[in-house]
Length: 348
Length: 290
Image 1 (tube, each protein chain N blue to C red):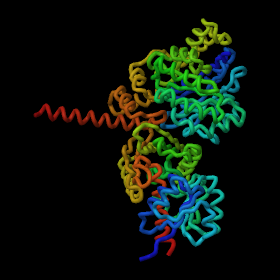
Image 2: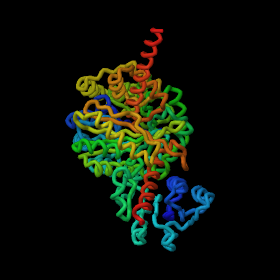
Image 3: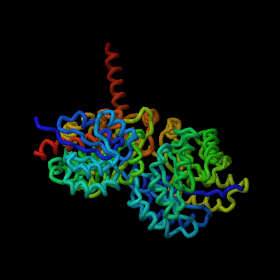
């Protein structure tokens, strides 16, 4: 028998990258109140890179995470409150224990796709406390299906309820999803999920392929609001699923209204894929680097697309935003040298 | 010529072996005991091949024969060190703790080595702490009112052993505590990133400080003076991005290439903490044991 689909809405988490982590408790409260009865499984709340990630490196949050969690919890009656955390940014003591206190029920623990043993401590702790905990493998385009399965087996052993492949760079093609999800579904006894990004315009299509291959957890956002080119657009995905009689429990008319009112009107988000997001996806670079890349390009007067291409060559992972400055500085130095050489050559 | 001070190393993993490799060419230290739990481990074989006296009875080898050493390096785990610390204190051994147990006085040699010679137990913080706290400290000496320091250490996946991975929370908490205590800033944060790229990346560190209108030349000079002090025990430490100031944030970036004693040079993160520990043992041997 097929598992029921579990839908997580990360608009208040991944979407936080788009608003440069400026969400207020008031906005979170009103959004949660509006979306509470649409039939989604959980609303994920927090900084774009999860609990504890408010930093100069990634971006400082306007409102402390605990206040956002409290606001969401107050509004959510039917939908669960979820949180995301990457070990190395947040800790059990500083972030998970307070989140439990503020009523979080669903926990997603993230790490770079090849480093799942950094989540062992946290998954074991949460599973032991009786919570549903999922391991999220970021930048999963960087590992082949077999190596992802090795990570999945470890995560299963730690006690996770499921594993979610994050296409953090928006670099997956349909065939990548098919192979990787199929391998995990076949090889694991826990649930498998997919979190798509839209750099190459494939987030919804990739998610549909994942579901067809047996994925039962879907992570997306309203209007696709999220890091870089944005995420899998839930208000498109769910109506498509409904055409085939799936996800009948979700009221997508209501979802579309919430997307219009809060994402399009209040946040003033117009979706569409910018040219630098396409280059970012092709280079396989973490989507959320976009704002920092634009800042560094301006500071060092270089082309942001060149920064993305160079970051791709250096195989940077999520959280390495400081390298952007180094790359931009080196590109500007190279450009300066080229200009000088050109000048010298033209004088010869 | 003065006799060398005798040291024991508890823990035969990567850190223990790198300590041993460094002590083998020390002019002031001699390793008289390398002790762990498993005779067949890779580290044990490494030590035996060097002709070092080994034991599989961990700390009991010291308890049974206290004369064997003056200085003890503990390269086990935080939970083991909690048991070891009182035993070593009772035996009056100068103890250098390389676990994140935080029992002893936090030690960053280029900042507080003198104060660390008169206490029974010193803690070497974390690799990220050794690499970044000196830079934050140099900035805080010029601008004592810094509200917030943040550090980011990126290390290669290959250099992050099971200890680091299982205790990633302790890394962030301990490094943050060191930033707060050494700089007296109001708030601090430490981040660690593990990158699996091949060839392995060299340890990279960024220090951010929020402050208003710093004199960049003065900051740059203070940082370079501090780097000279660090280089005395970690020659592969260098600044790769000189201080820049943008939107109220001062940023500076460093890189640590290891000496390649036991582990390859990309493991600068292990090299910096073992080098700091050996530097303290040498200083103790030269000054405190007279």
